[in-house]
Image 1: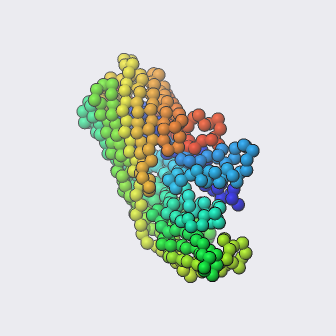
Image 2 (image 1 turned 45 degrees about the horizontal axis):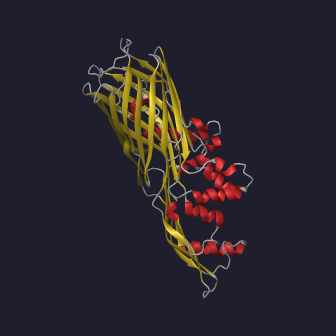
Image 3 (image 1 turned 45 degrees about the vertical axis):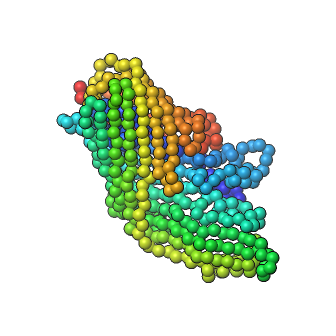
Length: 463
């Protein structure tokens, strides 16, 4: 059972594909660049994403463990490796999974050279902190931890599935400056949210008491908020009913939220470019299909002689006493969740001027370069603070049809993340493929994060 307990956590981390979209940032050949910076420069005048194919993104990661840590063949015991990994992780280590699917997108430029965008995309985002103290208590018990507090606040997670409807514009302010904004309406499908939990479990020696040990559960207050969960677990619902409910909530029939993106591009000179953006400054108001599970209270006992008793009678007695002293409630209170705000900033240097004729309409009218070197900084707000990533990149334009980008990223997952992006434009069709953490693809068991992105768009430029 110990192995299966830890496998549940590792499943979240196994190179499933980390939220890492640095590859697309500043890549002005792609409409997806505008999703990362609504103030980005574009070198086309209209785009149309192929439904369900214009952007497919999968990413996942673990900040502190991978499958190789557990299953490597080193002659030792798997239980020893699990125990070592368990103690290596801290409560601030995390597991994350992110998926995006663009359903529809379109963009066009007006006569004043402003570029407008509109679209819909579906997103799944899950973020789980490693519950260090509860995990140690569940795996090893309390026999070797007399006098130690096990803190339930270590447990925290967020998860949501939603559709995002967006409309934005990029304004050509001058030859040196672009800025843009994008408004968003979030249509919630499912949400689970549990942060700011409290409480401790403690065992102390009590030689003068009725038994040798005394157990305490103090200031316990654990709350798990959910919206849409009850429908997913309805055993009487048919597949058709579940699909109808899913589509209704996906298209503004469920919980609603609002958000804003903002960004800019600034050229201090022809060769230097500075960009920054803030994404998902927004919230969701969870009011429909809400179920909240709360467990709270205080409990003290020295009436059980065994530590985690092995007989059913002792267990039933302890469970009955817990039920009498700790309250278990299911509520339907509305709650508000905040979207994970993301920040991007970069500095870019272009060299090897491209003097070839270009059939694309560049509103900022600047010189073009075959090569770009740059650095990007990324941060995302999570319940216990910011997670950071820093990326260095080399961007190469081969000709008007082919372009590539290679990146090196240092983040919470690793310091050896190499990524590659390739884009090909054939007539009005543009295809791109991006992947990171390439060094671990020969042995995915060692990967602590990975991401894959691909898409196909129609793009049009003025002659």
